[in-house]
Length: 298
Length: 313
Figure 1 (tube, each protein chain N blue to C red):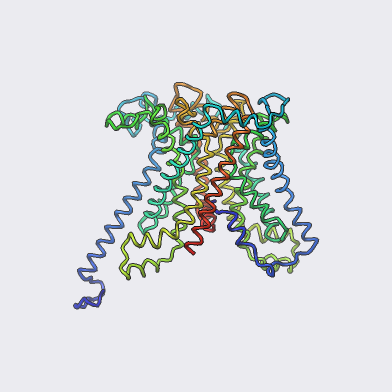
Figure 2: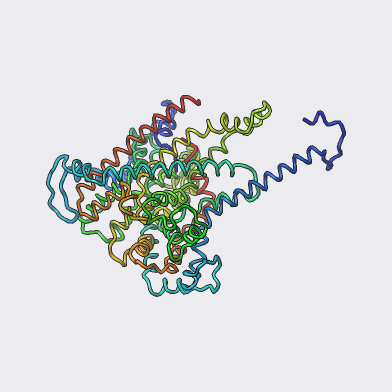
């Protein structure tokens, strides 16, 4: 292209053509950025609206036309939520249940993936493949027998039972995320450790776990978010008011009360979103790459 | 998240000579490490599935101990129920309506975000927010925005006279649109992330070569971008089909299947059977039917995937 340009330009000076191209490129970049921001707004506006509304006093919530910014911002909905509802209890319940389900799920996945990739058992790979399929089962299909099982054991309405049920989510999910991380660890690494006198257990603890640590974090964060957001199992298994999870608590606020106190519900929604986004921010890099790594392989 | 395990499972099998002969004491350790997974899977999946199959052939109340074998009676009963065909139709409309919107929007946005522009990384991260928030939060904020007394969208629709019901979730004609809208908003970032990851694997030099040869932007998209996206589109298409099909939360929280069953999808239908009419047997029969439909659809996707692999590689 530049062959046809006769005049020579010194460094720093641009030909009219190059300047035009640069301007066009800059224009395109601005356009793309604007589009991206517009797209972002589709995602963010409903959430911003929730955040803003949670600070509006009731009079402003019913104001017509609605104003975007709260005129007299207030924490009254948060105070009400904290003092006059069982939401603090719901948060504790959910942290507890999700924590147990995720720690157990990730730990079992870690040792299982290790066993499958390091010892060639006949049928082990098809077996882990089947475990992944659990995630494809309709949750309602599993919810029915689980209701029956816990009913027969007299453990309906029990948080430990709920945590065990959540293993059906956390196990396949963390297996899925962890597998590529552990498969990527060269065997020579742990063999070297074992030659240097480590037992297999030590090699596992000192080589495998640190090497797979980003995967461990990613699968923990991911499964925690999924369990935190889960509704169906808790809806089916928990009927006791004090044993609700956060999702179930908000769901009952939405469904049971005919005249919502929208301020309260919005505040609850904000608080339910905070841990999820916090965890995401903490592990964003691992999570996105984990998502991507799993995605492009097939 | 979206890996098709069967494919990679097949591929990742090392060639026979590469497999090492493990030591026998080691094998014991390995087996021991696998035991928890086996126990959990048997207890938490195999046994429940056997139980569902058992229940599907028995008359069984939700809270009663006795059960009676009825053969295919439950299946007969649910298939003749007036709501059955309606909920199947609703499920397909919901599943594929959401899927096509999620795909189209996801693809467009992935192509947009694949370009170079300032603030690309943070925008990509924030893009995921609607995918990450709990379903209850998504449902709550959309219900709030469309609610009659307080909703901002409700207000705008009334003001501008748009031909949309101001509160779609209670409207006979717009409730399905409403639930599809929220489901799409909630889940399209998943598509964006997957497509972006795939777009990044395409060699930039292909585009340069094509533009030197005078290919238009459309031609480049048609002959370079699209072929490399189609396999992953089928994979996420299958996953999202299954997940939309199984989705309980969106519809339950927004409309509870109403008004007049217009948005009642199969998972809600099952839920109503079991926890509204206390018939565990019929619910199990329905769940088995859902499972068979999903299996059939997965097989179709699978065949398509294999065909595409042959065509493009």
